[in-house]
Image 1 (cartoon, helix red, strand yellow):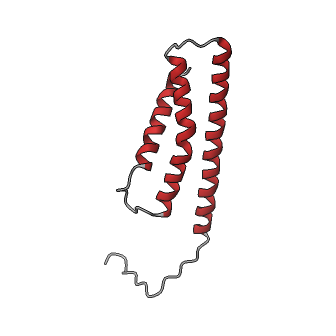
Image 2 (image 1 turned 30 degrees about the vertical axis):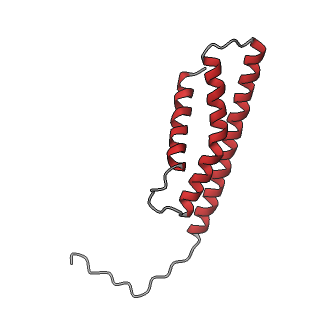
Image 3 (image 1 turned 180 degrees about the vertical axis):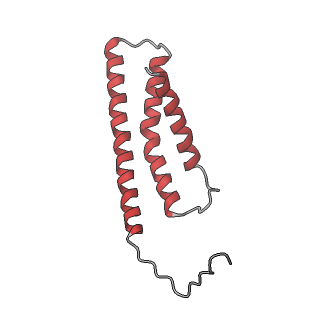
Length: 117
């Protein structure tokens, strides 16, 4: 197993737990925070499973080659699931940004001071 993969998983999980547990974030209750909390919730399950399987394999527990192969296959499926969650979230985010970009804004009574004033 790539040692950096374990570090990345641990980092991702720490970010997810801090986002999900942060009730003191500015804009608490905003759509962005709700989106991040939903994303964190959706990612915790597959990342937790990956961490558990990797730990089991890394500790050198008695695992025969067939079990190890099955566990690695499960990790691969969980990575695919995680990628799908992220892709779906990016699509949602892009749609939301696109809707914002198309919003018309009209400014009236705006006074711009002369240059050098």
